[in-house]
Image 1 (tube, one colour):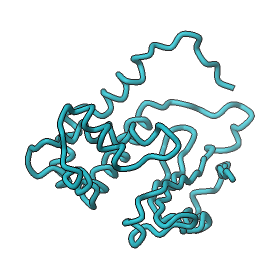
Image 2 (cartoon, helix red, strand yellow; image 1 turned 60 degrees about the vertical axis):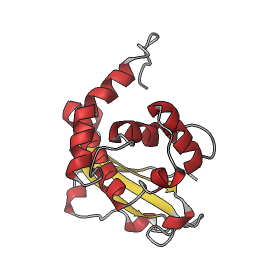
Image 3 (cartoon, helix red, strand yellow; image 1 turned 180 degrees about the horizontal axis):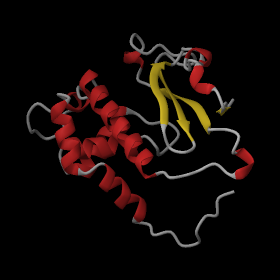
Length: 196
């Protein structure tokens, strides 16, 4: 079991995240994927952090509460439709780029090796899927299993840091269909995470 340090610098996580997703990188990426077409009231940096961190609080979040959080963070007042219209395919492309960038950045810092007990194996691969509830209007693109609209993110990552795969599916996609077993499993331990 990992030892948790007694004193954690409260700004360390913030500093690491701001270095990983710098304002310049976020603005350049938003422009490159077409999420931002011209500078307006909705800054992609503020929008990114509100979307990423705003859904982690509370049992149930709404787009209206997310809009209010954005208005507080940006000191801008928005017409609801101008905020809601930002949830589109260009936002999906932007967030996919951010996710890939974050995973690549994390993987580049990892230098773990397996212990002597596991030396017969090349690696330990952890596979996990997470289901995220979406707004009902996205049900056609992402039909859900328990709700109208759900998104399933499935990732397989080696413990030594290499990401084998990451994929996005509709929520009703069976877990068995989210991972293809092939020759790459030879000499690896596979760990499937399942929470019910």
